[in-house]
Image (cartoon, rainbow, N blue to C red; front, side, top):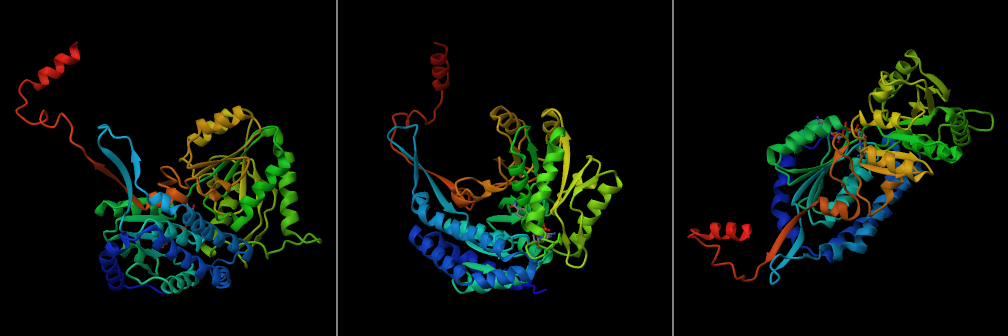
Length: 466
Ligand code: NAD
């Protein structure tokens, strides 16, 4: 594994600490120009990005293309709004003669640490928000995606000097070296376990953090919904990237009476998407489980569930050579099974059943707050009851994952699933300090505020009593 040395990291950081004062002064036009050049470089390297991602994580090129498109869309959105975001925002002042503003100033030098599952987007999407806000940045890709890491370095070097934007390579040790440095902000995407390590390290320098973490995302399906469409959306959400998505549906709550119809519809979509006319399971549109360690972990979740009484409703085929898992529905699942105790991150979908909506509400609330909550219902009362009863980072009603694609919505978790958010103006603000600026004016009480205080408090208290 290529690993940037500690001394090189310290050297880059020092350069960025000096250069931040220049970047800080840049206006919207300059930042937009940088982002436009980045967008051009990304578009020109689209084939290489797709090839590098496939090399690292073996996923369908169509899915990589969509992933990269999210970054290009984010740059376009920033381009349409940055002038406005950089304007001082005037707010009412208590003294009518004074003027009060909120100004978004860059945090300074920021660190961005990425995860492997969307190796391009998880680096570049926060990076474009950091650039929009006027920061210098050091980014570290996951050690699982070295080809994307090297390509990211090449693309960014063609536009930026390392005193402004730099890529460092390596795993936990490299991240550890980075986290010793007094960054002004740390943006981390990854597991809740490592998120805690990052937050502890940030505390040493009182750096602010954005933690984009994971967890178990529940789906609650009401009675009376179109089960064919619901199954289609769930099959898509579970199959895309083979369920290795932070906001993939993790487990499903279905009304007891709907299990059979749902399983039939889910199985139909999986067959239509992944089997040929002879019923053979195809591999070309499926993403492999990232590596043998994770593949074995997924198999053990499955085996544990079966050993403890779960039943396969559809799927269940494992390809040990190509690390592929067939999208699989499991029923008779209980909270004691390992599959209900950790983020699955694979195309296994356990079904829990209910007869009264209070059952999923009580269960989900007893778990860590999820990154997303999915509700399928045509009944506004059901939707409101579940949304107001269960906290989560975001909610999507009658769909899966699409809240992530709305540029005006913040994307992030809550407590165990994350701290802070990004995308659009929310990302710009996350990488900015909201500074209070008051342009004061003389007021008639200035002399009265000076000592001696004798008699002044009494006067106020007396006035209050009247
Ligand atoms: P991970 O936590 O293992 O690794 C993430 C990053 O942390 C990598 O760059 C890695 O090198 C670094 N790292 C590993 N050990 C470290 C340590 N001890 N100290 C400092 N840094 C360390 O996560 P992963 O396996 O790459 O990603 C999967 C997880 O990420 C899942 O939980 C998923 O839900 C979550 N995720 C969240 C989002 C989101 O936007 N909320 C997006 C993608 C993935």
